[in-house]
Every structure is written in structure tokens, then in C-alpha cells.
Length: 320
Image (cartoon, rainbow, N blue to C red; front, side, top):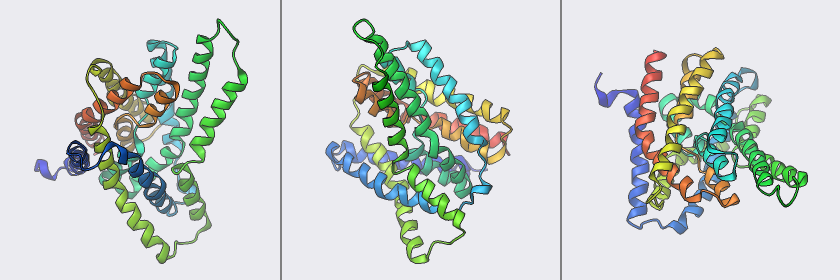
């Protein structure tokens, strides 16, 4: 088979060309740093919900396989805890551990899986996305609050009310959010047995088509405004933990759970995508490791050109 005709090449090259186009736009000043927030709002508040709702409205709850969720978190939660032990139970260590665990399933994962594996692959991925942030960000919030209380233990005891508020805030933010809500609404619509009217389905389809290219260009624009100087060593450590260790662990876990074929492949590819942007929000909120997380996100995205290619090639060979 010609290399240019290989499915991995056909799927990955458009993804990284669009990211590269975003980097060019950012470097040339066509899109400034100030516009990133507005573009992110467009993607997250309009395009993503349209895509998620329409995709999941075509799925029947009874046909969903929930083993991918169990397999994924059986791997990533222990890995998250192990990194905390290794880096130290501090706010900084926890944020960096989250960086080595949390995948960019939305901005990169959806576009890549959609291109490579189509609608069946997206259903598996969106089932995971529905609880991904809820579980990992809640675990990170609890750990960060406990670490903060431990650091303040010399002056005051653990504030249970503050811990509860932080946990509730993480749960609420993860549920009342433009990602899980349209997934849940789409599943409910699918359970009703009704088809979407064409006058509604067509605009949703067009909005969903716009999501992939714009999201990937936005990733590139963000990278163009990311400083890397002086942060390479730590950033590379986080990127390797995320891009290499997580897909290996998830693949082994999924295999142990009895997953084969497309669900196994989608889980490994999802685990191999770069560090997700939510990690920076935690670094910003707790005022720790902001420069390191920003650099790690950029290095992880660049490194994924290689690691994602390897993951997709290996899974293609194993499931052929």
C-alpha cells in the first residue's frame, strides 16, 4: 500500500495540517491572543453542542457498551495517583500529575476519531467524554484541596466545608457544561425513538462539520502564543507520561476488560492524544506550575505527531 493511501496517514495529516495552519495564523498575527477566548466560546458553546447532540441522538441507550469507561478509568486513576506519589502530594505535584493524565479528547480527539473511525468510533469516544472531565477533575479537585489543607496544617485544621465546596464546584462544572449536557440530551432524544426533523438536523449537521477544522486551527493558534523557553525538561516529562504511558496502560486495561476491535482502538487513540486544556485552568486556579503546564501542553501536542502515529499503526496491526 502506498504510504499516502494508508488510513493513519489519511487521518493524521489533515489534523496536523490544520493545527499547523493555526500556528501560522498565530505567528503571523492574523489572529491575536485576545481573540482566542472568543473563538473558544464559539467552538464550545455552539459548534461542539451541535455535533454532540446530533451524534448521540442517533444512538440507543440499550446498545451502548459501558466497558470502555470502566477500562479507561481502571488505568488512568491509578496512574494519576502514582504520579502524585512520585511528584509529591503538593498542589504543584498534583497539577503536573493531572497534566500527565488528562487527554484533549474534545478539541483533538473528536476530530481525529471522526476522521479515522467514523460514526461508530465517535459513539465510543463520546461515551467516554461524557464522564471524562467529571471523574478526573473531581478527583483532582479533592486532591488539591487536601494538599492545600496539608500545607496549611501548621496554622489551621482541614476545612471540610471548603473541601466540600471545591468538590461540589468541580462536579457542577463538569455536569452543567456544554459537553456532557448535549450528550445526555441527545441520548434522551434517541431513547424517545423520534428522528430529528430535517429542518433541525441539517443546521446541526453543518455546525458539527465546522467544529473539527475550527477546533484544530484554534489549537494551533493557542500553541503559537505559548512560551516554551526554560521549561523543556519538565514539559517533556509530563508529555511522555501523557503521550506514551497512558495509552499503554489504557490498552492493557482495555484488553483485560475483554475489549477488542474498534472500541479497543478508539480507547488507545483517545489515551494517546495530547494534554487537555483543562489542566491549565487548574494550574491557574491554584496559582502553581502555570508556565510548566502551558509548555507541557505545547510539547505534548508536538510530540503527538509521532506518538499518535505509532499508536494508530500498532492498533491497526493488532486489530487487523
